[in-house]
Length: 221
Image (cartoon, helix red, strand yellow):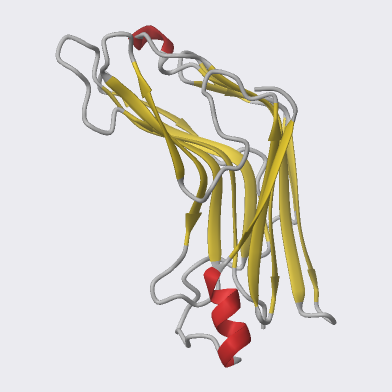
């Protein structure tokens, strides 16, 4: 897959807020004020855990800027250099968080007869006002799986081996909204769910999740 793809995701609660002028009251937000990272991973293979904490993260309640020279878990995933910025405008009551990543390679499926999934470059962002939130993402240079020109929310690509065994579900444009909906949103550009039905007999057991491009934000106050 060559070229550049982008999509804007508007939190459903934004529409509700526009119509009613109110948000569901809560003692604490369902989603954090604002975070962004190039991704993360937590995989268990043959009893051994391979974990990659959020890559180059930033947060409105933490570091305003994040960066990473890249990280590799051999045979699982590689993240290239990444950076992020989280900012607020107290006067306008707005916020924005954004992360940029490069050179992701998901290699966890190769030894099981699956593809190597690569993304050359990508960006995720989440912006907020007092009235709601919206999240956006874009990527270029996707190989290893085939996706449509327009990718809807929570679009899932089943990845199978040559003998038909389900190796993973690759969820693109994964949108998570809280219940009750308070206007906040979480977006994962790509979420690789490894062996959702369990590892077939005779294969080394593996399970876990690999995320590429993650962001979240809540309406401002």
